[in-house]
Length: 210
Length: 161
Image (cartoon, rainbow over all chains, first blue to last red; front, side, top):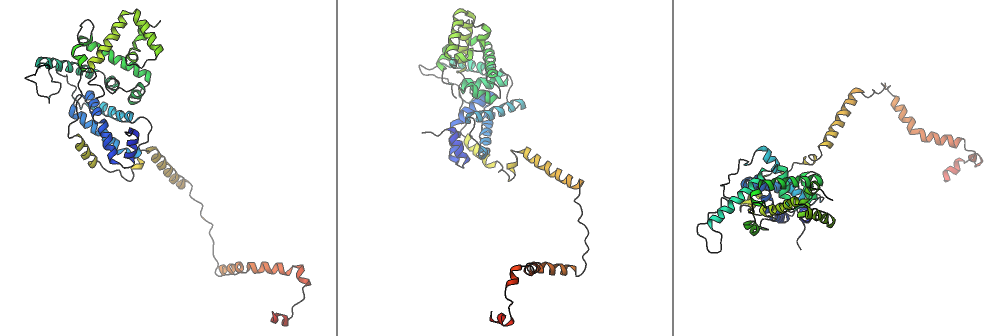
C-alpha cells in the first residue's frame, strides 16, 4: 500500500532520502503545470517548482503533520508564483495568438487518416492560446483559485487555506473568476455562438489533474 | 424562492458537485423558472470543458538532476539556525540581558563593611570554635546531677580501666 504524503514527509524528516524522491515523483508534474499556468513561462515554472521542493527539503526537520501536505506544498508554490509575478519575472506581455501552444512540438506536415489535419491542429493551437491568455488575464489570486479548483480539483477548505482567505471569500472569488472567463471566452462557450463543443468535448478530461 | 443574485454565488458549488441535496433542489427549482440562469449555468458547464483543452506539460528530463544540484549547493543550516524560527525569543532574551545590565548599573551592590583584622584575632577565634564542643560538654557535665551520685573514681580505678 502506498504511503501517505504525511508518512513520506515524516520519513524524510527522519533522514530517508528515498521518501523525498517519492514525493518528488508524485508532485513534480502537478506543481510544474500549476506554476506554468500561473506564470506562463516553462523555464521559470520549473525553476519555481524546484524552489518549492528545495524549501520542503530544507524545512524537513521542522515538519509537523498538521494540515494536508498538498496544502503546504501548494501554499509555498502559490506564494513563490505571486512573488515572481510581482517582481515582473515572468512574461506578462500580451500572449500572441499566433504563439504555438508548445513551441517544442514540430508542426505536423503529413497526417495519416483519422488524425487531425494540419489546419485542425493550427485551429486547436489557436484555441489553446486564447484560453491560456484568458486565464493569464485573471487577477493573480483569481487565477490561482481557478487553477487549484479546476486543475488540481482541491476542495474549498484547502484552497482557502492556500490563499489565506475564508471559504465564503473563496466562493465569491471563484465565481468572479469563472464569470470573467465566461465573458472573455464567450466565442468558445457562448450558447449563441454555438461553438466550443467539438474539440473541447474530445479533450475533456485529458488536462485534469495535470 | 431563490433570486438570480443568490443563484450566482452557488453556481460553482452546484456544478462541481459539492452542493448538498437541499441546495441542489433549490437551485434546480430556480433554473426551471429562469431562462437567464439556465443559460449561465450551461455556459459555465461549457467553460469547464473548454478549460480542459489546455494541455499539460511535462517537466524537463533534467528537472530532478537540477534539483539535486540545488539541494547539494544549498548552505547547511548553521548551529544557530534554531534561533531563526523564534526571533521573538531571541529578542526577549536580549531585552532581559540589557535590563539586567541596566539594573546592575543603576543600583550597585552595597560594599561589604570594612573589617580590620587584628593580628592574632583569627587565631583566637579558631581556637574558640575548635573548643566550643568541648566547652559545651564541660557545661553539661558540670551541671549534671546524676553524676553527683556516682562514686568518685580513684586513681587506681582509672588505671584498671
